[in-house]
Length: 173
Image 1 (cartoon, rainbow, N blue to C red):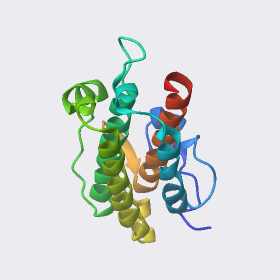
Image 2: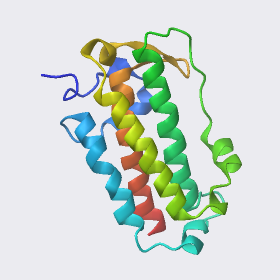
Image 3: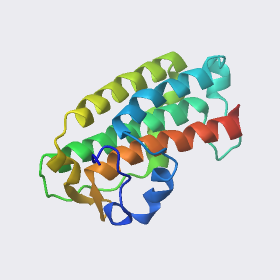
Image 4: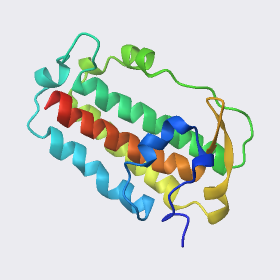
């Protein structure tokens, strides 16, 4: 079975990320990434900028901030996948999401702009991942102090989006 179809093993990432990987349905991960990105558009189609900027609670992010966070995280995870796929061995630092969201100024942007950015990022992630050879999918490196495989990173990208799509449905809409 192709590596694109095989769910990553527990030793391919930090236990923290297994919750994202478990959300992803079985099958070709690149095809999953291609299909799933339209879900966020369908989910937010009737959401205006005022609704998307509102905070559901003082410590919660707005819809715009969630969309921006999903983009930032995909950008970071795809970079890690590229770094490891190309055989780099330098450890990569961790990312703390709350400061990133606070500094992103996502609420000042139109929701349509944030969604368009996400579309471009997803297309770039798919182009990267779809063109990796079998050896690249198996390469590993250290990010946030944990071993990460390229394959796990692809599944984490998909699972992270699924996680936030669920939170958008449950908390915001």
